[in-house]
Amino acid sequence: MTGEITPVLSVKDVVKTFPAVRALDGVTLDIRRGEVHALLGENGAGKSTLMKILAGMFTPDSGSITLDGREVAPKSPLEAKALGIVLIHQELSLVEELTVAENVFLGALPRRSFGFVDWNALHRQTAEILRRLNCDFAPTSIVGDLSIARKQMVEIARALTVDAKVVIFDEPTASLTDQEKLVLFDIIADLKAAGVGIVYISHRMEEIFRISDRITVLRDGAYRGTLDTAATSEAEVTRLMIGRSLDYSRNTETVAAGAIVLETRGLSCGDLFQDVSFSVRAGEVVGFSGLIGAGRSELAETLFGLRRPTAGAILIDGAEVSVETPTNAIRHGISLVPESRKEQGLVLGMNCRDNITLPQIDALRRGPFLSPAAELDIYDSYQKRLSIRSPGWRQLVRNLSGGNQQKIVIGKWLAMKPRLLIVDEPTRGIDVGSKAEIHNLIRELARGGYAVIVISSEMPEILHVSDRIVTMYHGRVMREFTAAEANEDSLVQAISGLN
Image (cartoon, rainbow, N blue to C red; front, top):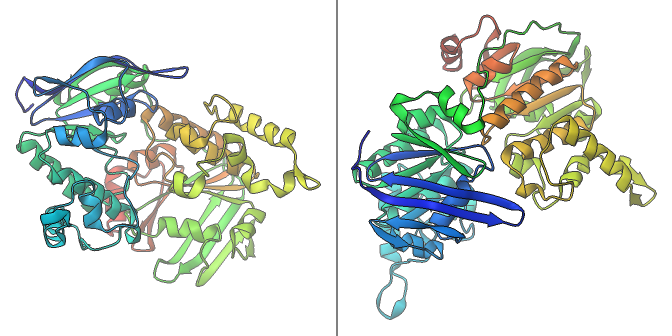
């Protein structure tokens, strides 16, 4: 462990209550100088609420915050930043119409005499920060034109504009490539070496155990304990988080697979993927493993009619079909749970019921009007079947946890009665307890006769849920494994092009 014993930041007995919800129940936490302190908990455990209090976005009902031995109570993010507390949001808080430089120094633009912005200084200082982050875009780039991963790097760049004492990273790698993650970890190591206290929130245990010095766990808004990372295990941390152990074993279930539902023969889509041939049977889960750019998501989008193939064939029940649009795909019994549930799978401003019934509005019409009773029947059915935790159907999906949002997306497509369900990154940004529920759901769907394709960047997940695993590299299938044949070493070799 590193860092002095005297904490740079202390939180003591913090309580925060929202209508009908006690989000924080007397939480105590200390962050030392020069340490990476991981904060873990299921969705709804209180992590984000605590961080928003530290960042000046919420005011606690009671309790105290001490920074460098002095009690503070930031009333706004700008005030918190001035004190040296910087929050890097999971949900990007950028102004897309402005340039990278304007976003990085938003609220603190360098000025010349008479209050005019010093554009040369702004661009020079931003360029220095971007070089430090190994970013390949210019300070003058418009943020709205950048990819999600690059926007995340702009968010991180903001933290480097001040003399920070505490930097809070909330799920910082959710949208980053493997190379960008390494750059981020180097930046965190530099901040740590400079004596900055780092709070790191992530659902990715491998990251937590790679970079953190201590781990604090919250459950149901309450403090559950702090552990030295080097002296604990993933199993112990998980027990603190959810109050029980989880099964991370490989899939050993014997599958009584039925007839082939989907088959591709030499399927290609320009430069995205070429000559892909595989099949999926009723009652089995076929996992797709590969690095970013391998073509897995593009293959899923082609099967769902979002992209048009340039060669090859798609067969349903042995007969070649044309899947040129999502409407065609749905008609053939294919549904897709997309990679990004918030951007591609949900209408965040709509309620739970309307999100689940959205794809079948026409079928629910009674004359010119929708049938509320029919909509509620569908919602109630999948709310029970998938154990969706919500105060009621009127709840806006933006207010649900990540795990429950994902269940809404899955429920929406199950309600279409598909024969093949494609699930792209099923547990991205979801806590370990909800991950286990999604994994169990995928296996239950297979046992119920569905053909399921799972695309995941997490090898333990692929090994845990799949009956067969197809590996891809640079748009081509490298090798196919049975569950008994596959292990992490063989998968790594295959997805790295070592066939």
